[in-house]
Length: 377
Image (tube, rainbow, N blue to C red):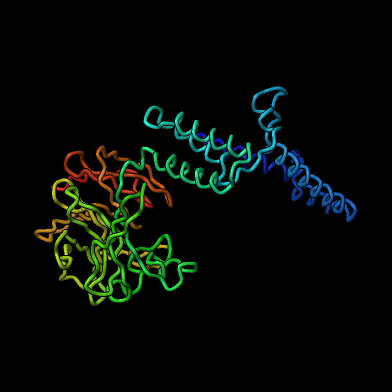
């Protein structure tokens, strides 16, 4: 006999004995109340009072079970818990020391922690001796900038960025900031991507000296520039934007050209392309609304994007993902790792066959446990 059938028969037997008065269920106000009502009003009142007390007792037991267990006296955890945590203000010698120590532990010999700690000790000594406050502040600011920019993850000297004038930068959010209007939505919710903005692509250089900002590309119309991806050769830049009819597409600007060229198909006016990345084989991983899917939690009223493989020369596309919710943020990775873990609201990287579709894709909602091969051939 299966466990499910055995459990069902056992519960039926308990119910029968309860009705017959052969089985009492402590703390069950419903059963006790029924018996009390048959015996008289006073018994019914006692039954209700007992039920309330039982519920209170269960709440107290649940709270005690959830409470953290007491640490043994003298243990390391107990001693740490007894010490109050003092807040550390940013931009102080203490916060800088903590940052230098953390970078040293994280990167080892790649980061010169001993050098910066020695310089910080000198500055703290000058503070204790009462040296000129302005000069000490300038020396500390210079050390702070040098020590933090020495992070090995920042081992570059130029940044490609988007410069976007805003009506009010302090209050701009969502669509007015040039972003989707909700985290579950896609670029189609941004208004006027081809006619209502004035973005430029800029190069920020001399990060550790006198910063310089140079305009790399200014659109030939009032265009939004987003989802920027730099080509492997450093000469081409791909981005998402709108045309004069505000239809989303993929554009590429090459150094020295006077304008950007359209990479995505231009003969499908009701389909959007955006959020893409270059692939080593010359193709492009992109997201598109070509699947004609709608956001489930909003009755299908908002478009969703699936992952596609695009050949920019032939304009041929191939659908790669088939879940009900949007895919986004395609990213070329050196070692793609597939996953079959389903989730809602959490990003998991998926990928195609290594060497053929070397693109790890961050999926906001992965609804299928098992993925099929994504060979882009």
